[in-house]
Each structure stands twice: as C-alpha cells, then as structure tokens.
Amino acid sequence: MDTLLSKKGQIVPQQCNQLLCDHDYGCYAEEYFHELLTFERRRSERSGRPFLVMTIDFTGINDEESRHESVIWSMKSLSVLTRDTDIKGWYRSSTVLGVIFTEMNSLETETLQRKISRSLYASLSVEQLNVIQISFYRFPDDGKPKKSGSPSDFTFYPDYPKKEQSRKTALKMKRIMDITGSIAGIIIFSPFLILIPILIKLTSPGPVLFRQARVGQYEKNFLFLKFRSMYVNNNEQVHKEYVQNLICKKISCESDGNGGQKVFKITNDKRITPLGKILRKMSLDELPQFFNVLKGEMSLTGPRPPIPYELEKYDSWHLRRVLEIKPGITGLWQVVGRSSTTFDEMVRLDLQYATNWSIWLDIKILLKTPWVLVAGRGAY
Figure 1 (tube, rainbow, N blue to C red):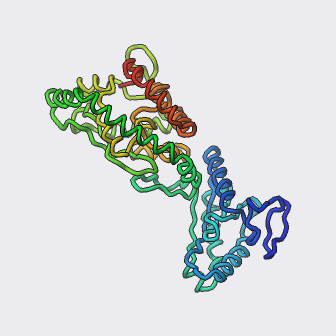
Figure 2: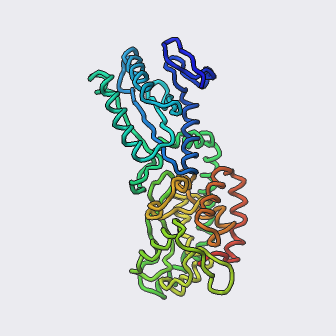
Figure 3: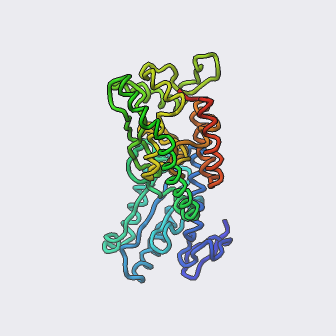
C-alpha cells in the first residue's frame, strides 16, 4: 500500500481521507476501523482462520499532552512489530487504540502477545504503564469453553450496538407489539392455561411447569417456561448428546416414524408422557412463554433460545443467532422448516431473519404460525 508521512511523522495510507484516517497518529478512524474489524470477523467465521485484536486503553491518562505522548510512543513500537497486513486504528476515538493481527494460528497469537507486551513495556515509562491497559482478544477463542449467563463481550461485534441504535424506534414498536400480543395470547388461551395444568396433574406426578435455563440475547440466561410434557427425573443427557452431535454433524436425519418426512429431532421419545405428545404436537406446551415475552426475556418472533450446553459446540458464526436479536416463541425457522432442517440451515434462517428483520416480517410470521400449528409439521 502506498504511504505518506503525516504532520506528526507517522505513516498513513496514501488513499486515506479525513473520514477514514486519523492523520495525527497514522491510524484508521474509529468508524472505519470498526468496519474493518467486522469484515475480519466475518471472514474468520467463514474460513476458520483465527485473528488477534490488541487494544491499548489510554483513558486512565487525564492530561491530554501525556496521553498524546503515550499514543505516539505506542505507535512507534507497533510500527516495528506489525506486518503490512495488520490494521491499526481507534477502537474508541482518542482513548482506545486497536490493532488487528490478521490470519494467525494459535502458536503465533501466543508468541505475538508476549513479544508485543515486552516491547511496549520496554518503550513506555512506569508512570504510563500504571495507567495504560493492554488487552488481547483472539477470535475465535478456541481452547476455551463457550460460556453463557453473562453479557457478551462486544470487542468483535462493534456493529451490533450501532445496528440496535439505528433500529431504536422500530424495536420500541416491536416491544409494544410483544406486550400487546402476549397479553392477548394469555387472555385468548386462558381456558387452556387453566385446563392443561389440571390434565398434567391428573395424568402424571410432578410439577405443572417445566423451568429451564435458556440463553437469551447477548448470552444472558433466563428462566424459560413450558408446560411439563415429560416424566419427572428423566435423563437430560439423552437430549444433550443428541443436540451436541446434531450441531457437530455427527448424526443424520431420521424418519418421523410414519414413513413420512425426514426430521432432525428425537422421535418416539420415551421420556414424553402421553399427554405431553399431544401438547407438543399442537405446541400447547409453549403457552407459558407468553409470560417470558411479557417480562421482556423473549419476543413473539425470533430465534428459539438455546440451552446453555448447546453453546459449548457452537461454531463462531452460530453464536450470532443469540447476539443479533431477541429469541422468540415463533420465528422464520418454525414457519419454514422446523425439525425438517439441519442445525446449520436453522441458524441460517435465524440470521436471515435478524438481517432482514422488520415489523412487517414479524406480522407475516405471526400470521403463518397458526397454520403451521394446525398442520403439526415438525412437532414432536
């Protein structure tokens, strides 16, 4: 890439204009750096090739001149350590510097982290090091189990908060529709909400509701509600192994048991009660989720919320289905493919929904859902 010197002696790309680059420090401006980081993340999701992001946080330096000097020294050190393909820019303008080290392997990332840390610690003064925070992030973070239950780290997803902000008004309308729809659903289905608990108590011992930790948007866990359709004290390991093998493509589809369509779900599950089979076939076991919607943990439409142990086997691109949009009772997957699709196909439908989401799309999905429930396709 052709380069030139800025007024402060830093090297910047020649094609760089004022909107893309900070010429004072010879690095990309925040908005463009975020675009490049998003592009690199998406490329890594497709190729499986990891990359490393380093951030240097200067917010602890209150004096503007001292901060400027620290940034200059850091940039000089980085100019020796970075390759032509590495990308330097403001992760947060004027306060947090970022560097994207593209296409690396696990050994390279570990070696590079040590090398850069040594160089920066040798270049900066003790006073500067006491107030500067240097952090490294690897994507995908292989070798560490994926955990849920806490807010996501948006280091690699700077585009998500911006996208949510741009949809602020539409998301408020979606929330109003969720509150109105969930209250209407509770009222309309109130006879079932009264009758089903009685039938569950009469046909099998155990609680009426099945409560389970599920992963919501931004990987926040919440208590998911369903009418109990299984016998109590059943072995959860059966479902865990099946789902994880399905995600890892270690199992293929099976027959629905009637010589019909092929499905990607456990059929003829002996853990399910006779009443539970009817509830599942008609999706009546899902009715308590109107209360999840009312509380704001779910939406009427969106991806189905996964169980925490599912995330352990997720590829990096799978994770986007719990980041981009709130989970829902029904969604594009339910009205298009349901259990007749592979896991990857389901995720693609969820991401398609998140990308093209609009109030009108939600309305169309909600209008299609009753027909799918009546047909009972893919429900087990």
